[in-house]
Length: 396
Image (cartoon, rainbow, N blue to C red):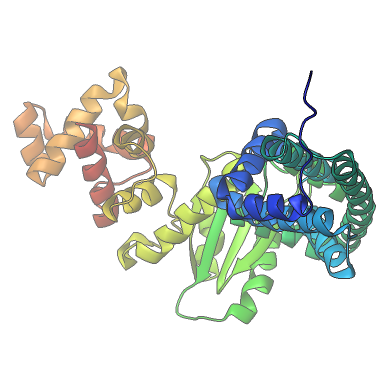
């Protein structure tokens, strides 16, 4: 005679709720499933995952409570879901992806409950299904409405929306290039594929209240606000931050020189790494010695990477830093120029370097001029001499 499976005793929902809430592995399972199954979340960097975990933990606790008590979403729950949707509209994460993440979380929750209570009563199972369907339907409507409203607000205030876009890029709040493209399309703009991130600050003053006006003034002075692509400006403290087409970097040094500003322009990072570019530039301005800021001269990727190396936290491998500073001198055809530079750096004078290489002094000076033309760095300048010396050292 086949025995009938024992029914789950009364209070099983509360027992299961307590087990799941107390087990940190459940939240990790939800985060892992969302990260794997929803492409937008798979592209999130590590700095965004704590927020995903926090939302998952809160959502898990609320859903289990609703199931254990036969409850429904309360006004405070709806306010929080609307706030989450508004934040996702601001950072460009599509609402469809957010709602899919909640559905994936619901599936994981169901599996976890089934694993702990294989003999749920029909009433408990139906209550779980009803709670999930009702909750997902309600939060979908609330979040979609809040997302749309926030998107309209951002698009309506164009200047604020563009500034917020760059703020989010700097903070690394964009999940992917696709999300950034979608957000740009909603704003009716096209961002430059090859860009220059310029971080600049006035010399001899600390006026955060003037920084944004100065940033927009720099855009006008650089004459890059129009055309097919859109340039962006925002502020960080007393510093102006501008996202420009890469070609604008060439004239930025002269403009800053006239305005008594100093800056750092990063051109070698992709659009999904604007946060990395900003950190490089800001750290360079924090650590560069005064003599590195010659009038009309911008610090570049090469300067920023050398400074990061000197600070003990290099953002690139030594061979990449050498390539940034030395450029074509690292190619086989530039070997004779690199030898001339090395001799000059080692001996301290063109005459001594010429004697070491058995060259006429004029030939050595010609090679040093070629070094300056190809690298944009003059070995007679103290700062540029240092960067050249570091680059040839780390390369060898």
